[in-house]
Length: 114
Length: 111
Image (cartoon, rainbow over all chains, first blue to last red; front, side):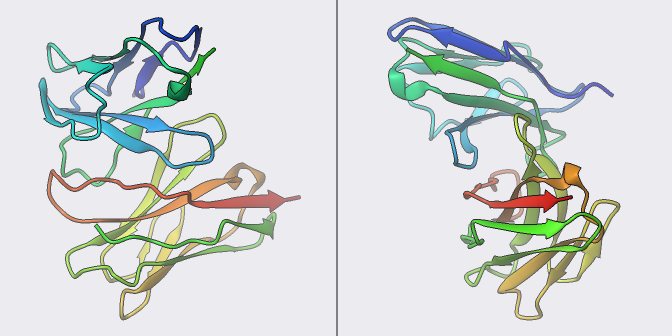
């Protein structure tokens, strides 16, 4: 069974530039999560989707961050414009349902903003 | 969700049992204890979870005290590949319950 796929694995951009991350969850998983992980910290939830609906985006900085999951399968997280403080690892995870005990994480995208 | 407290780091010898402690003194009756781990440059991986009974699977054992205020994750025969950050998380039930990660405990397994 294929795991959660994320691309790119690494991205380096200059500040004020836009950037997008892509995630393909495990087949059949209705719930998709985006997390942010700063160096030395645990992951922090940015947004949770149930199918194509964003059911929890309370931690998503909406002035510069946006996300979509148009067909309830893969998802894109965008930052525009990027700031130096956005340098972090962006993790995608999926689960069968929101109440499922196990979330499956992808390898993450490491973003460096210069 | 209740918060957890873990020591920042510990080490153990390869082949020996690794006992990772976690305090969750404010846990409520319907909250579960979860453990995830994160190997360097990978995403977190689910290990085990429990409510009040001890649990065991192919990866580890989870021992929860009777008052549920603390727990211990046991890796019975640690290998070098078990070197990782281990997160103890308290999580409620239902779709709106979140995984709230702290800083975790860094386990170093030495040869």
